[in-house]
Image (cartoon, rainbow, N blue to C red; front, top):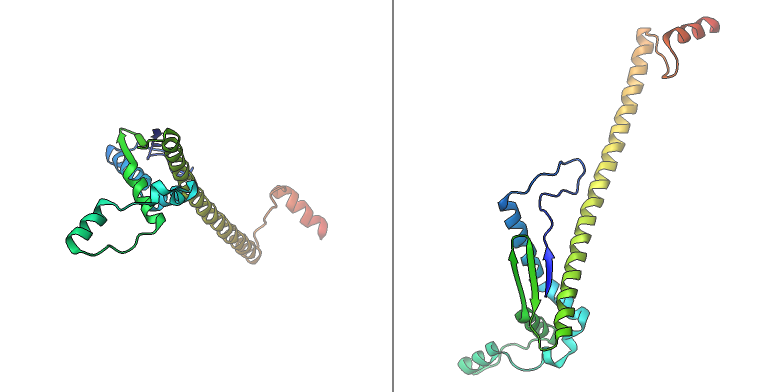
Length: 193
C-alpha cells in the first residue's frame, strides 16, 4: 500500500497569481482527477511494461471469465488479446485506489508482497513523474510567454523613447541624460557654442 497526499489545488505555479484557499469543490475535483489518473490505462500500461509484467506467465496466461462467458453463449472466441493487454487487465483488476480527504490510498492485491509493493511504488513514481513533467511544461510555457512579453515591452519602450527624442528635438525642449541635470545640460550647450 502506498499513501499519497494530494497537494493543495489552490497552489499556483505562477508567482503572479496569489495563492488562494481551495474550495471544497476544487479539492473534490482535484482528488477525483488524481484518482482517475492513477487508475488510467496508459499509466497502468507503462507500469506493466516498466516492470516487465507482460512477460510473466501469471499475468498473461489463462482465459478470463469474460472470454469463457462469451465462448459459452456465442460458441466463438473473443478476438485475441495481446500479453500486454492481458497483463494490464490483471494489474487493473488487482489495483485498488481509495481516497479520504486529501489522502489517496493505493494498494495492490498479490500473493507476492514484493510485487505488490513494487507495483504501487512504481505507479506512484510514474504518476509523480508525469505530474512533474506536466508542471515543468507549464512553467516552461509561462517562462517563454513572459520572455516574449518582456521583449515586446522593451521594443515598445525603445520606440517610445525614440519618439520622445524626436518630439523634444522638434519642439526645442531641453532634455537631459539620466546622469545630467538641466543646469549641466545648459552649460554643455553654452560651451559647445
